Image 1 (tube, rainbow, N blue to C red):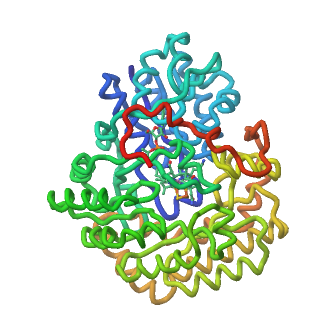
Image 2: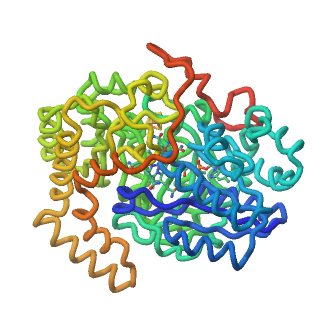
Image 3: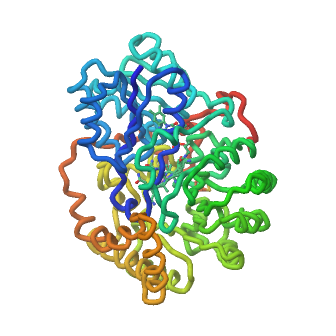
Length: 499
Ligand code: B12
Ligand code: SF4
């Protein structure tokens, strides 16, 4: 079956810093290709809607599959699906991905028949079966994880063996467009899947039912060795949780003589516990790491259930410095913040050499805060659920809140593009231009056009076409998190290394 796999556009604030290879979609597309289907991928982070429609017209796919990891992309995908159905009425249209898994029913409702089914959970094993059953609705609605307007199949199942999966990297056009900061160009890779922690604002752990699996080091290193780009983004939620696995991976990478520059995300306590593993990876090219600090006081950390103290986080930053790995951290701005809170964050951020990002506390479907906070929403516009807008009541008037937020983000950006930093930046920029890579240089010019309090405020008055659904029961206190799981432990088939 001719199938077009589609990744929606970038969210406007993230496109400044990065544009990354959609690894999940590539894995799903490759499983369809290996099952004998003819496959194309359209990444709308790079291409425009008109290019997508041109592909529909010229190639006439029999199926179109949308990836929906981000809640804020739901309206775009629903509109694209409706337009596709209009142009190709016989085309089978489905969607899957992280956010789609938590909102399957409402996506089908908004789509009004334009989306034939939503696939919940991991997509690699089930997608070939979905394509097989595309024109057999009775079979389709019996498949694990599949939701159709006429009924749903049983719970989704985890893929049996992560080592047998392959992303269809070769299928991506304009690969040079993928980058993160100075890692330009940059590919993505996966070493492990899932997270054993349970932070209240995060849905990474509820998606996988708190499952944690590792790729075998040989398979992961083979995939890495096939990557042509000099930069590599490791998509794992928390890298190198198990030191033996991090070491075994390093050994395989060393054995193959693979030389890359890496960016990864981890936790402060994991870095402190496994410092030697990170040191070894530094020697292999680990250049940047992201640490989810989230709060600068212990009460904040407790509220997010980060299971770490501020003291440990500060130690972790010192540890990263001692290893000479550049760290970026994130702080979650709560809607209850006033001028004093923002000022305290600015002061702290200027006192440390790390790159500091500030995002807004946003309850997402699949998180515990979704169950406890959603009754207070001030907006139910999917497009505002991008951690840059406030969807809960702010203590400050909203325009003031955005002014403070933008002021903080600008101070932090300037810190890194200040005088001393600028000198190095120009040297680097010249190097990129000489190699024909323009992503990093373009990023430097975009800051002020994107960070703008008025723009953020006016986003709240855009006409609302699709309204996000609310949980049926609002929880007051502790939530039974198992009810949020997409993959239940019982449905685990052949998973490795669970915690
Ligand atoms: C890597 C990553 C990124 C990369 C994205 C790279 C890319 N282009 O895809 C970067 C760094 C760019 C990023 C940015 C952001 N991210 Co992010 N990210 C992740 C992370 C850690 C891993 C995703 C991943 O690659 N996993 C590995 C692959 C193999 O899995 P996968 O993509 O989920 O795909 C599988 C299934 O979802 C499914 N599937 C996927 N597509 C399809 C399509 C079909 C048709 C089917 C059937 C199945 C299917 O099958 C795949 C294989 O099993 C997740 C956390 C997580 N564990 O999911 C957060 C996560 C997805 N991100 C999140 C957020 C909030 C963001 C930001 C908004 C944050 C910010 N500070 O700005 C931005 C927005 C990005 C944008 N759209 O512009 C949230 C999502 C919130 C939400 N519900 O919308 C998550 C869940 C993290 C969290 N804390 O909760 N992110
Ligand atoms: S925020 Fe990080 S540590 Fe916490 S549950 Fe999500 S992925 Fe795991």
